[in-house]
Image (tube, rainbow, N blue to C red; front, side, top):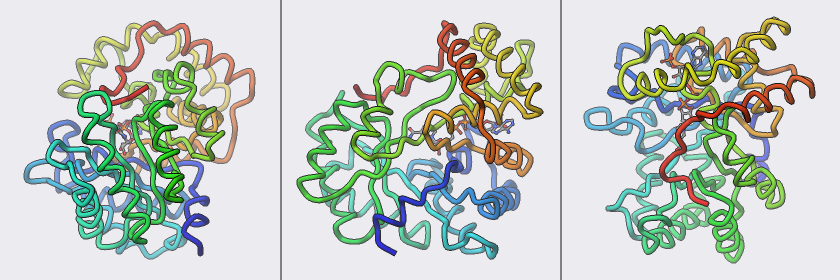
Length: 327
Ligand SMILES: NC(=O)c1ccc[n+]([C@@H]2O[C@H](COP(=O)([O-])OP(=O)(O)OC[C@H]3O[C@@H](n4cnc5c(N)ncnc54)[C@H](OP(=O)(O)O)[C@@H]3O)[C@@H](O)[C@H]2O)c1
């Protein structure tokens, strides 16, 4: 299969693995690994074959843990769709990574942790807003990974339309296509599409838009209530603030979910799919993965989408945008 063809087969939905390796933020611990293998197996056997990770997922003792686990899970999986497994990683623009070669080495280190080639390598964020001198060399290194045949495709993350078009032009001069762009996109984070116009730009440039945090970190699942209990840490603080402000949106999601015999998570994920994006919800348990897979195989109708759009637009408190999101 041609390199470009391989990634044009990206499924309608993927699975995020940020939580798989992050102890402080998400409460991950090694006793969860068997359960995560079961999540992986369930996803792949149901045709959810795109997995998103990053070389910064897992810190300290758990450095690189998410990539290590994904590689192991992919090796151990023996069911259908094995050949379609697509592992997308993101290379962090760490301040100590500032040469072209450092990106090539980072890509090779990810491949080593995965125990296989990276399918899609993504620049995790742009340094354009705070260290513009750093970025060009990192981008050169990203394109080198593609040219050297070490990855099947290249993507970006947290780029706005201006930066995206700049990189598109730069890579086009080397004949390196951009396959995907991932941004925070959900009913509580419509900004990249409604205000930055990224979907239109991506469509024009032939780039697939990946929606990360499509469940707004769990806020759109309906399982958290204003009275608590809340998740630990900053997520809990955010939920305390946001839950009272998003009542109309939660009510709209719940109403549609009930009338369709679906869950709120399924409706929230399906909305992302209806908007032409590839959502990558993070699932920590087989139950969550099973539920999220139920977002596939059906479509909200136009009146439901309009109702959700209106509820989202009238919500005055939204998700905080990633500080690295550029214009
Ligand atoms: N490019 C970037 O800068 C960037 C940034 C963030 C994320 N991402 C990617 O996007 C992926 C997904 O985003 P995310 O994990 O931040 O947010 P998310 O997908 O919006 O939320 C995931 C969390 O929601 C809860 N959940 C998921 N499915 C559920 C279900 N069916 N029922 C109830 N609860 C459910 C789980 O947390 P609890 O069980 O604890 O509630 C889970 O960890 C990440 O894994 C990562 O790959 C990329």
